[in-house]
Length: 219
Image (cartoon, rainbow, N blue to C red; front, side):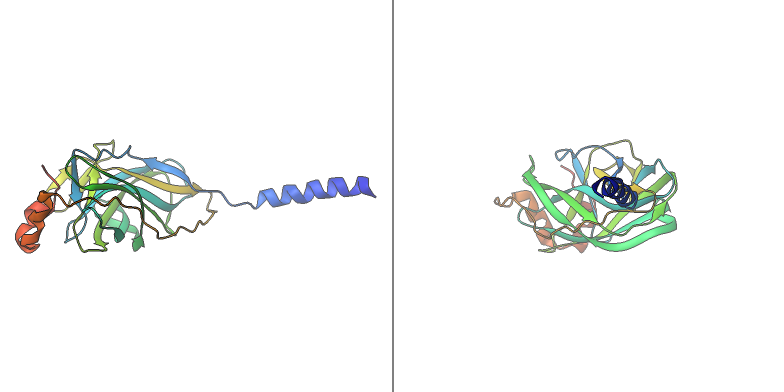
């Protein structure tokens, strides 16, 4: 009787393995966070768009990781993320407000917090090709500007008020085959508290009067 149970157990194990969903993997990476060159605003009406490539057909996008600059002590809570066929336009494959988990914040040479911002979502299933990822309407705990880190990776990039710009730091996650393992992340954030630099006071004069300054974190 024991001899018969062994192959039956092995057969059941094989069936179980066949239905295990694929885990999320890196679909595209535009390189690491730079943190000390420049960054572009993704709130107050500004939209930043970067291209990313999908290698395999039937790839489901499940999340992303982004490099962001924030006022020290502030936290990125959400942003509108869209995936389109064109530069912030064309066919829309995904367009939702997503939440972020903030971690690994470091103070850069300009006194800003440069943080890793991770998000997970039920994204579209895409075929192989090139797409645009767009970020806008970001919200923070304190209502301050938030900037997407410029790292000049291989992507093409643009900003809705100036046109072509160097590309930003981000990674797109997903899985191939239509079956993805869903992971749950907490909303706990990690920031480094430091005195706000004098440059941050530029924003105290009012958002409307500083639109030109807000669009880009230029020093």
